[in-house]
Image 1: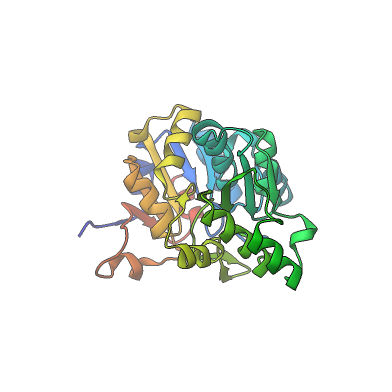
Image 2: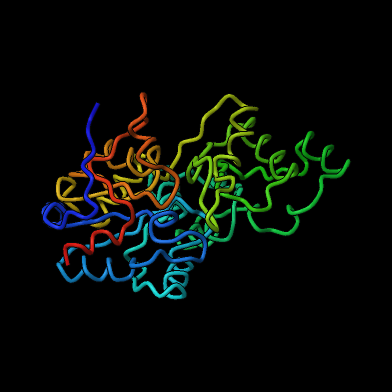
Length: 305
């Protein structure tokens, strides 16, 4: 089994680690913050890396916010950033649908299971959609709904894709529509399939909890467009023209962040222990991924300052 190098408290090892890379890809939830709580020293760490000429890119699976909404969160939390540094799964999905999937009209509409972040990014790519935050889908199902969904009269014939992301208002009505669109041949996509996400020093159901019932019903797995999907890595490489060998992925989850960096053949991966996974997880037999390096928290890198 591959061994991880522990960096916390070793200033020389941290210096050597930082010098190996030109670009750092950062997960957000569990690395920079939990909910609306910014981890101590995060701002100073990012400023330190930028002062050393390192490029910082924020790669998040959270699809509830668009890049512009994420930028507002960064500002509210006191973390300096610009829109171009942010690459989220909602944006990745919109790019995939518009530039790669390229559904032919009129059957090019997307049925969205998700929040405003997905809708905003689809709009920027001029992708038509229904569902999402539309209040008419945020209610209990009725006998009339069952009849109209069953005979197709309440379904939009132009839907050619179902995109599932984290939806704080998921319900039976939305799942029923999505299921019928998939039965009729719609392409099945997911912003990501994370089982959980960290919030307020705890964990809550992730986007995978939204897509899983559809997987269970159809037997079909969606094409996932967040970490660890290499479709997302290819998009990041294309957008930023980075050298993978001089790039490091920093994250808290083995199954998404660390696996993303390893399968993307990046020069290194760094695990922080402020989120989902801890040292015992990657040292366990059969671990899904093993980081090349790890620290207790991101600000431990300041030991090299």
